[in-house]
Image (cartoon, rainbow, N blue to C red):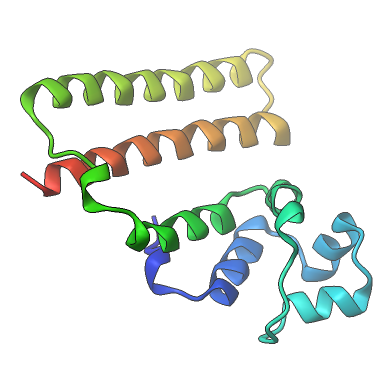
Length: 147
């Protein structure tokens, strides 16, 4: 995916906007922001969406890049002990969890294909499940790097 630890919030927002396929004006309108607020949020100014608006913004954007950026940035403040070293036992458990997440992707994909059409809602559900796979895989990588 992207190394979100190495980019600024402004760049993360721009990435999220680019991945959305929408214009800044469309996003601002869906968020209920005035054109002036929309311009300020999407410029280099130190002016950001409010914390309570982030979930809606991610929904409008159709991705969780901003939330993922926040999580990545906060990792440096966590104690390294929070990600345990992988053992053979935890590897088996983690693989089971990863396979479960992959199964969830397959389930959503099969449901989407039942009528032969792929809707925006179905695509977003599949993307959400794929993010779960990525998160589980990244957790596993963190534990394996400590071996």
